[in-house]
Image (cartoon, rainbow, N blue to C red; front, side, top):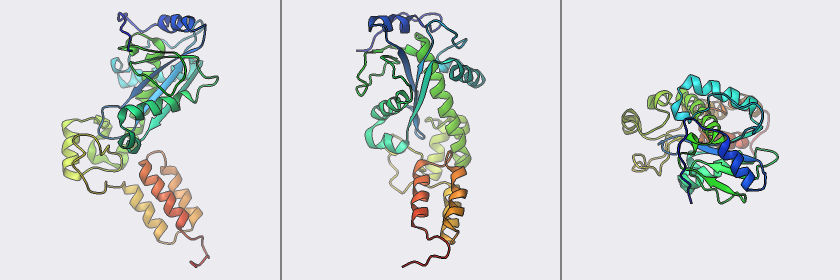
Length: 270
């Protein structure tokens, strides 16, 4: 059941404190996500535990109410001052496999698993997390009510934006540097002209009518050619690794598979 509360002027720690006391004085983490609506890229979730009595980041807001520079500045404060935080990601392929809600829950669980000791209760932005066996308070517009949810929304948004900026270098034709993978007019036009790539969510409307193998990234083709040219395995691996952060996960996994099948220098194929 989602809880509606009066929207305060700015998010506060009050809800987190009161819910923690109701649950026996446990530590409370705020959870939020970014990227449920786009046609491409991952969904990212974050979990944040803020100090109830010590220093907290200034000017916390719902991430959508901040511009990019303000979010980056808040991100740095949050990771410096939070008692604990975690960031989890679910890929486009996981979204297609289990649906966007379950992939969001999976990303949230991955974020929470990074906080030690684990929180004893959760406040979320209208998201229930059945995998987490702790008390939960799903708040409608929670990122405008709870400071810890607002902090989580900023970590998730900044992380996803950084990922899409990196992916835009591999696929500049989709204009992800601007639209971040959301269903904008220019993004639909680019899909229509070029087809989807391995970062697109093939189950989403506007992408799901494509049945061809999604396009792979230019770096994949270049590195694949190096592997197939007989480049020594370790040398090829050293070339692949710097691209790991910005390669679509399917492209990176396929390169690793090809590397594992390649022959070390001087070894003949049986």
